[in-house]
Length: 545
Ligand code: G4P
Image 1 (tube, helix red, strand yellow):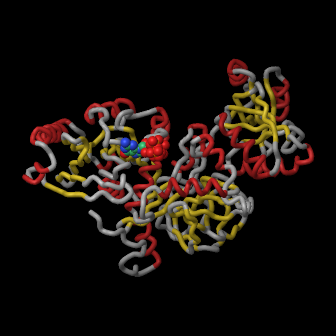
Image 2 (cartoon, helix red, strand yellow; image 1 turned 180 degrees about the vertical axis):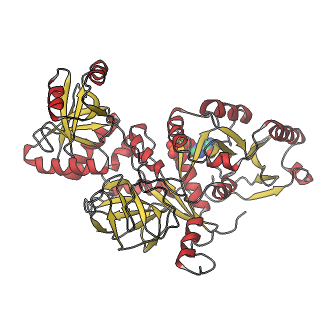
Image 3 (cartoon, rainbow, N blue to C red; image 1 turned 60 degrees about the vertical axis):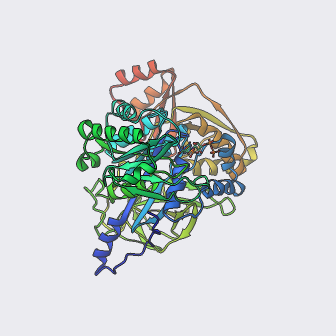
């Protein structure tokens, strides 16, 4: 169980460009971890990187996270608040697979970012704390996966300490989330606590050596058949009998594995382990990569786009400005959906018809940036952007195809922005424009697409704090935000005269978004409902049409 991770290079040279594309697609696994804060996502990520050979001693992801704060001002806010607001992507090789792990921010105010990241994933790992089971944030993220029918593999973490009875926990997950659970592994508890897992797929007990380095290196493992007498050297007879009884119960009453149900998001294989001590992590990773699908065809306006079609396609699901404030750069994260990507290639931005050169592409390994020359469907690459790209943009060098399943959200909080220094208005406008393109803020004006009083909208309150912090530190535009009493935004389309009339009614505020589209805000839910029922000539939209 300790064989070194192989390199990303394929072992045999493919015969043709088509064969190479098919081979590269088959090797890709692109996933995200969904969990409630504190379930152990950072720890598990670190351990996956450890087993993938991307880092050598666990502990370095957190250490590097601390480094980053020294060079990136606004992430100071993350540190102060003890939360993670940025998301990134990590690529590492593992046993012939190219694994893309999309890291999602943990705080619920940043759900927009997380939801968009889930749109770029092909599968998900649901991470649960063995004492807490399904928690609020997991429930929300699970709902997004369920809607998209994303296949989910579950890892029950922290089994090194006593938790809920595993049978009860599975029952709770099934009832709470409405997904069938198949126990692919089962915890083995001896008198000294958690000592291993039973691997039901291969019918063997895996007993782990307890490390003396607190999980900084891989856990050595011994594998035994259930009737192997050597097992009794690790498990007391009473505990072994209990394990046998539980396995029998699972065999008789548990859900058998059903690949189709798994791929449709209706059944989740469940693993037990401890990210902290590494127990159960390696077997979980191997099975996960085996079970999780390679990139599949994605829906677009031109019909399903097959990853092995030769034309290159992809979509932008995240934009991040100033990742390195020394260079004031802007990186667009592109999920490749089909064809081969080559550095410096031209691709058409479907929204504008413009041809863009995709220069200086990068991949992210254990949070280091690496320049790359090529990438394949399933990969996520960072592209240097000069302000051309927007979240949701589709790029192609074949026929036009727009990927539509990137979720958008209406803002729930609104505030006016007042510059602390009127002479820095230009910096403020630049900052607001860039934050809006990044999806970090939604910006509105009272009169057309510019105007004296910008109003910002956010999905979560915490986003306002991040905005002020970034406008001050990245754009040199200190400002004050003052909440306004209007909310419940609706984008409105219809005849101009009807729109004008509707804008005048009391209890409403008309604004324009950065694209010049009219938006009505309402004082309360009652006035919104009244408008929806009575403004027959107008159509109201939750997000920009
Ligand atoms: P998150 O990213 O999901 O928020 O969780 P994170 O990995 O930061 O873990 C949250 C806490 O849970 C950490 O403890 C971490 O050490 C602990 N943890 C993670 N996996 C396991 C596990 O398998 N077993 C046990 N017992 N604990 C686990 P902390 O005290 O908050 O932080 P730290 O000082 O250990 O870094």
